Image (tube, rainbow, N blue to C red):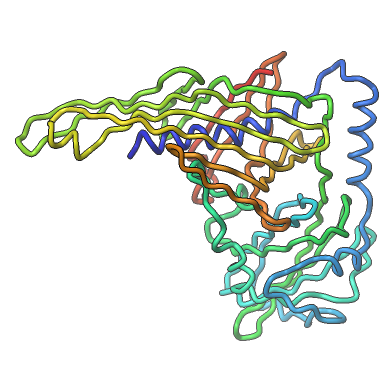
Length: 377
């Protein structure tokens, strides 16, 4: 029902946004040692990675490694990679958003160093097999927005190429060159993208425990505000079979949301709340509102990486546990299969912080939904 969905949306969104605040804000009086640590992380991420080092340590489902250079393109079909992400993750890799005027059958990808040198090999990727790598992943009870590593910037009609990293790829910078081809053998002109493998962590002075205060949501021109610890209700009118109408107020109460952030780039989160939902069958029989309570709890563990020059933070999740009315589902994701929770920016004002998350669901350039999340240390 609607109220149940609202409850789940609030808590999942709260988890996601809350993680952003915890790691992305610094203070003017940060100690020199913390500043040095943050500078060292940024310097490490600026290290040029060798092309063969990257090429020999990736795992691309549906990809066949071939020696030499990719086939010469005839440029008869198009390729746009303007939505390709420029951030990659340790132990995870990256995704590339591909847009073409043809039906893409496959992709040629060759890795390249920042100095222009290219790898001795390339990968020929069956895009249908590669895309199937995203199927079958668990969906959380409290998760209402499915993010992939690059989904915040993808167009609705883009094809996604998934590239996973092995443990030998360290923080640094690299590039890759892409061509796509169709079933007729037409090959697009090559497109180059450069990316940074981010270190886990950043702004180590922000380590500690934090709490969520409220959420502000704007959708279809209307704004609603939900506060932690306060019951939030919506009232609707229902009609019985005898034509008599009754009103029911379904409510949800976010009890708490806490996150512990560690300076080593890890986090743990714990969010809990209660729904008061309408028991539809009993209500219809009695022709009056009959309610039942549903208790939710979401716990999460993973890593965070702060992109200092953009004021942006990315969060990846490796473990989550959902509890619903005493029933618990726990899932652990292996390296390479972690889910990107959120990718965004923050605004800091004294001891208060808020994050704005804007969503363009169909990729038309128009913002469909805006969420703001407010936190205190």
